[in-house]
Image 1 (cartoon, rainbow, N blue to C red):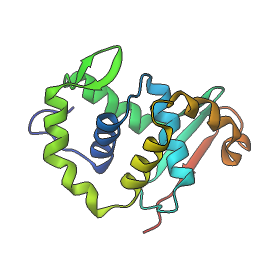
Image 2: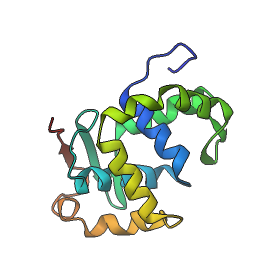
Image 3: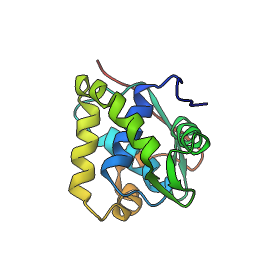
Image 4: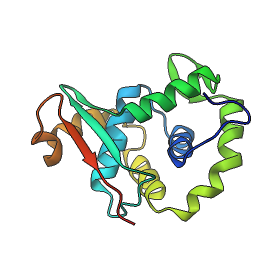
Length: 148
């Protein structure tokens, strides 16, 4: 669980950056976005291996879901309905954000988020056309390994 003196991984900080810079309305869209960003990125210096489970309407990542749950428990969101960081969440992001400059994948995620602009809902549609998604059956794992 995250506390003011908690331990934070690069995935925590990456999610904070995405939540700071983009308007993710649903958790599902955040899962699908990270999957597409990881698959499309030429910079595969992920913070670690990403294991996604294919669902009928997208993908699910248990690590990402755990981090979102930790953020909710630590009250980092404005309200439980929207993934918008409150002051406490933004302060945490600002204190750790400089660590991301040593990795290229977070910047690739940010560039992709900016290319979608206010149309992040398109991520939930675009995932169906991704070849690595189409070749898997519902319930199968899709493992994306980092290359350093």
